[in-house]
Image 1 (cartoon, helix red, strand yellow):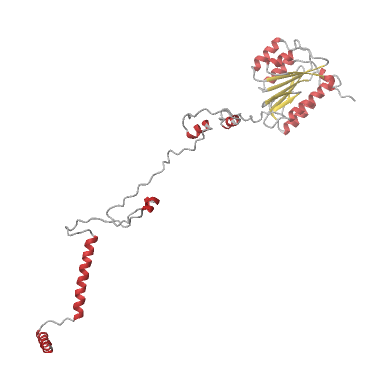
Image 2 (cartoon, rainbow, N blue to C red):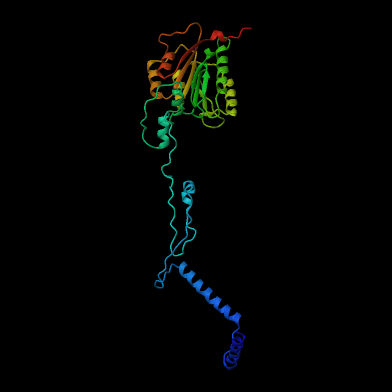
Length: 342
């Protein structure tokens, strides 16, 4: 055996000397062999990943890896199952999820408020069974009251005015007072009481209301604001002060003529006229009453206040007729009660 190895070594030595090629070390040959094996394995893996099983080139198929969850996870959230890897050539299918119906959202319906439900839903009347009456029915009706049936707010400046217990509301008031000589007797009580009540009534007006004052005997005298024309005046503080000065400046004198004073009062187009006189004579005639009613045409209320002594005369009283024909009231006062006892 040693002789055979020696002979083989001798032959190998002679072959190496005679060969023109360089001798390759053993480690280099091993490295080359392992490299070839690694390349073959890599090539095989690439063919598996690309889906080729030996078919023609270019026929590629996209594949993905999915992770299957347990049955418990599927019941908890089925929409979370998405592919972990997808190819760029084909979009990933989206999971169908329920979309809320936003366009048909409506407020909850209260079966006890059918009218309110109808307004909220914007539909026709709701067919609901009739409900038994309850103590809260009136309250419910008040809550459902529409603006058309609601009480309208009061008109600005339409406050109430009281003149000798004749109370009325409006924006334009005319006070017509008799200042004939008879208003000075007895003891100046009638004119003094008339002035006091008139000033008190003006104090109750607000700044949005208007007024005018007419004193009359056989002629008429209306309040005039300085150098301006005679007109309706707003109840400002300065105008009420001027009115008090005007009222105190008038002294009783002369006879009585009712019709011109009433016609002048109507020319201001008032809402309310307060008419005060102590003259039983002359009475307003039937023609005078018809003329006043025609000129007024139901626009102004005329309240009549009569001063006298003793008991009032009811039958044929022209002041009572004037008030009734023009939607007003009639009041009588015994001037003896106005006398100040000393």
